[in-house]
Image (tube, rainbow, N blue to C red; front, side):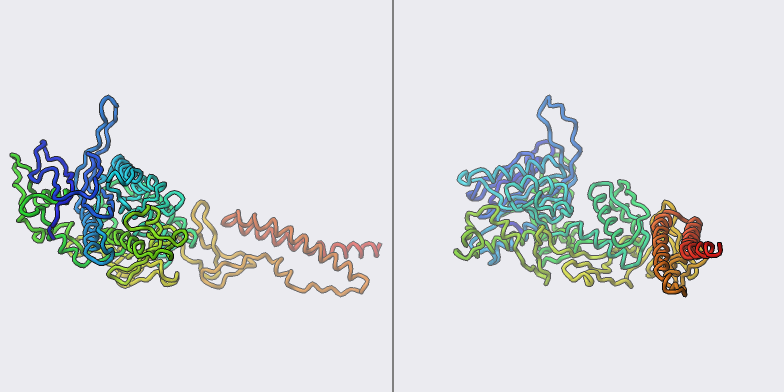
Length: 599
């Protein structure tokens, strides 16, 4: 699908050596509806509309910042390494806006966009956000393009920065990638929402899987960053609540992602993935992109020019380089690229739905009937002049469906229902990794129905389909009991013979550890005496019970704190002490009375 209008100011990356692009640095084919305020070191692509939506993506990587001496103007880190997958996310947002503008969802209203590249750099993230805030406080009569909401940012760490700056202004921010549990805190991030589940759901789902396979003794691996460490900490907490033990928590070294996946794949790994989605017409939209307009090299999308150079190994610059000159004859259909691979769209689909969530919120705002509105005294916001907090109200209340039967809505924390695909990493005949869906986790279902598995499709680390066991110790056989191992998790124990006077008649059941004195209490203590001595017998029984209680109170902590053979000694001491208590309290007074009578 070729771009049909060239109505905006372009901000392409300067070509090597300062040679001008043949497309030129600016192109304005018609009068701009508003003025775009930008920063010269921020790459962006803009298209005019009645309501402007901002996009915040990480299209490039950036080199670490050098030490600033402040003897000259500080330089921003260079951007490099164009990321085709991130470019697909950008195009998903643009495609959604084009669909919405060509539908009846927002009649008589056109959406525009201002999409920025944060370049994996916090300095640029802050600068872009401050630019958004500036447009919020500048009066509208200044004719400044004011983004009414933001799709992004591109990660949890960036969303935290952006969310804290935007929160006081209540500018809606909806992310398709940020998963940190911290962003659910509405006191800190009042205007943040997302179309991906919070990590809190993933940690709980991981613990549910461990319980599903009866894995009692497990280890955990985490990435060497806040995301990995916080996620595993939440998982450990959930697992321990369910009675599981963690043998270790190890940090993965910083290796290439592909190598890391291959190493884990050799272990028959199962993991979580965001739910895939399909976008009808999106593939045709991508492969029909062309960097030209009416026979000139002018495009609304400055990023497309850079993508074209990378994909077709050419250059738009008029220079003496050995690269061939780019042309518009090249066809993306003839190239198998990550950009045009729409078979496993996860973040792409989340970006698409985030854009539609804003459109549906605007639709509900536009359809408000004066006098029956949700605002103060039944008033409505005007689609041509509304406040950020008014759009945020509708966004939090929005409920809609796209394509599939799934319904998207947000809870009180701005989180959607958590839906994960459970995938098994399996090696194919070419020794490459395939990701086979073997289960689903859906938090919107009742708890007993949230996790569903196709266990027969899972290939484990030994190449079989038999579920491996994960125990520190096997259950104790009848006639033996558990003895905890000092310094090891509770799941680890030794099996030792039951001491005399105790029994265990089932595999894995705890032995009856009650001392014989307890059994003595269950027997009726009958002594035939005359009626005159009945009151004395009551006193003796009371003394028996008090002494027994003292022995029990001393026995319990002593028994818990001992291990191995020492537990048997403790039990024997308690039994003997209890027996002497009964004998002493019951018969010593009688023997004393008999002695006095004889004397």
